[in-house]
Image 1 (cartoon, rainbow, N blue to C red):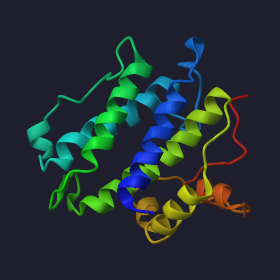
Image 2 (image 1 turned 45 degrees about the vertical axis):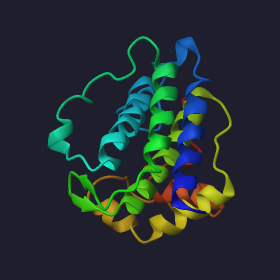
Image 3 (image 1 turned 135 degrees about the vertical axis):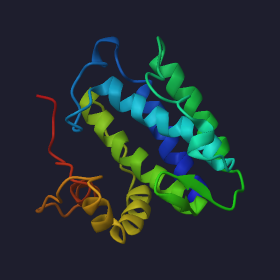
Image 4 (image 1 turned 90 degrees about the horizontal axis):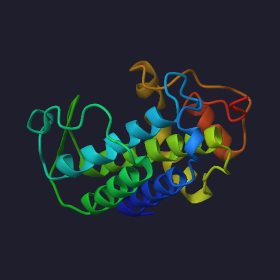
Length: 187
């Protein structure tokens, strides 16, 4: 699967899940213990909003603090839908490098990072609100192959939790590699 397609599919899936969040679900817990549903969605919307200037070649300093804080306002679903559309367009831009917090990165690598985050956080959101997760086999295979080479780097940087053993189904194994318990439920 081509990287822009991978990115845009995971972004669209996440936006569709946000549209399913019920009015009373924004404060529900998620597998990300520090975040409720609203904070999780705000995090992902923030990534999508950052995608636009970064894929145009801007630096973090040039963006400044314009994307800090609550990006959802009074319409979380609308904010997520708008950010997803803009991120999908930005993914098609051609830039030599993306300026990230840890240094310059290849734009294709950056889009794979975003796709992985959308896929995993999409699962987080789905199980938090009680809808079927969207771990489509092709997406899981693409992200799993990419992540296999980076798992220890992510773990050593503290970006993911400890790997959970005992899960063999590909979607569950990917979640476990990201430190998620595939059997998590909000109860």
